[in-house]
View 1 (cartoon, one colour):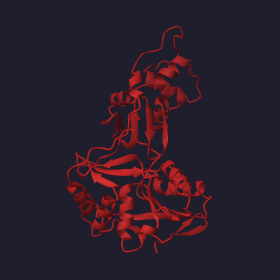
View 2 (cartoon, rainbow, N blue to C red):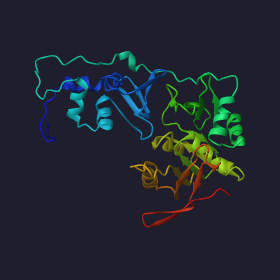
View 3 (cartoon, rainbow, N blue to C red):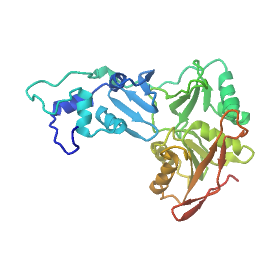
View 4 (cartoon, rainbow, N blue to C red):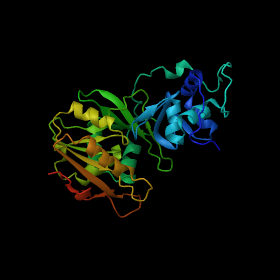
Length: 328
């Protein structure tokens, strides 16, 4: 076994070849499952990771890059070992006079930008209603409001499309969610701007509630549907990337307070939602007030809970007690 301190000589040609490796082919050779979505691919193991030729973007974290960074990030390889992995050469020494291997090199056409276009709508929203109101227990009035505002619709494949707008009302991206509970599916519409999140925006709002997923946002509004929830703004990041939040704040200058409504994955090795909430509070501390709201429970079909969430009003962050701003 090689030690981490050993020197591995690499040429610039070998590094360049590794950087331009087709990631989908690399994953398939490892037995990983990928699914084609338009002109890009979704990695089944990490469904927030979008792959396009030798480039990738993980919407849940905001990380992105070329093939070497992909192997480093997901397979925990050092830079030289990631290069060796990608070019398929397990030798430590190289014949510098020989041309670099030609394995799995992406074609230039793989990286041609694709124009963004919303998927064609289905003639009705029956599967959308069934999934959101029955499976996910979202209130009918919330679903109807989002349909009327052209924020959601059902496409011809039966997926729910969550439409993302900028501050001028222009469609910039979209998320898709499958309605088949037996086959979990989430994806992004090809060509969209990843830093534009799904939102319900009030141009005069001073409070912003931030969620990981669009359905989390709609579940929260279901809880508060009898309150004047229209006074605030709501944003789904589509993961845990800060980019959609930075863009939203840049486009909506009136926001003064933020509530981070992230997952509380207490039964998982890494509580990413809560760690992200703490990180976001540090990064966006320039605002007058920042709040932190953990998810205490999650709705499961068949359970007695109809709301899907139970939120605490106060939580200790370090030595500070942070109070969650209620909708009033």
